[in-house]
Length: 124
Length: 393
Image (cartoon, rainbow over all chains, first blue to last red):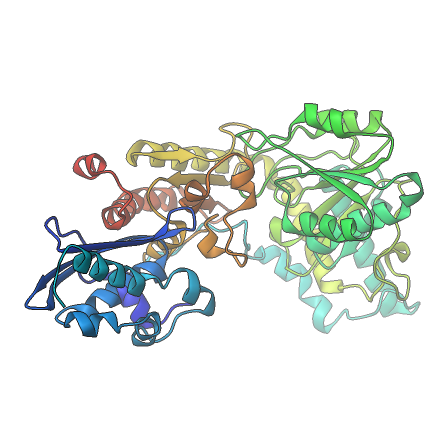
């Protein structure tokens, strides 16, 4: 059902955890739908110096969270804002069609975390 | 890697003895039972023998009361559409429950499009049908009530005898979808007052693609498939000879071995349930603790999701199922779990193990050793898990 890459990220999620003193935090989804994820970012010199995620959800939700953190780490704020759901799915070698909509939310969580950082007065 | 198959509600292996009984009917005994020569007679005799064995398994008075179909979905369609359309002149009201199999629920939905009124009875938190609601909803226009013998997802066994008495007092017919129950618990259609009963072959270790409908003598239905008039005109189409022979053999074995096997499975079931509830904090049993199919274990874990559990167990060789939306075609969590009053997020975290013949105590212990670590790993990952819980587990 899932690509090898998805299973790899599910088995060994990258950057899983929390950042207690995060500069920005973004949460999307909700437990009622079955998928919810939170992304924490630490920004230094306009770059995402550290990023972590926590996810409630299916294999695709966990794998896309992991992939998103991998894509965003080290990127400038502007670059990270350009990461889309499609980028995440593509880099995972594709997702089952039914998962594209409901479980591929991690890019949105990343954007929400960046907006939170900017709203708190962070600079681009 | 050890392979532990715990998804018998989804599919079962064919018993070796069943396969052996079927094999001659592919290449040597291939006659059409509707013909009158020797090969045709041979085929007809084989089908009648199988019919007798299926009849015996469910306590039917006569073997002619068994109609072979292509599977339980067709049996449910034939029972509901056949009885509803045949009895339309007496009323247009059908009663069923909110935890039926989709082949009953979706057939009822189709019948409502054709002018029938359908009432879906609520169940309690264990999944037992509300008998007071049944009494309340029955009217003189009610022609058919369809309630499952036991629920395949949460294992709950329904009080069919009581239901039958209530239904017959008002002159309606009782159809029972017995797919998950046949071969696991003794069923007696006569003593329990069942008018129509759906049976699946694969669920008693027979081949897939064959099933049966018990139709009590005197109960009239109309066919939903027209053709050459096989199966007393109620199910046209050349009989699936090897499949029917296989189902007959499976019924014979089930009747002989059911009691001992049910005792063995009940022990394994209870070992798995109590082990999980003991070893894993914030875990719960879904369904009834005792009015329960011998092979059914349905549990739920807060803060995590079922598909991730299935994938994690599959990586360790364990095959099982979940009522999570992420594992369904409709993207909705199990209607059965929701009907028992669970919230969506609770249903998402459910896990279903259905035991079978090949499972041993070692299989159960293998799962009991694996599962706590898997649940913990996913809980550590989940933003919903309370911090206190992580400190303790």
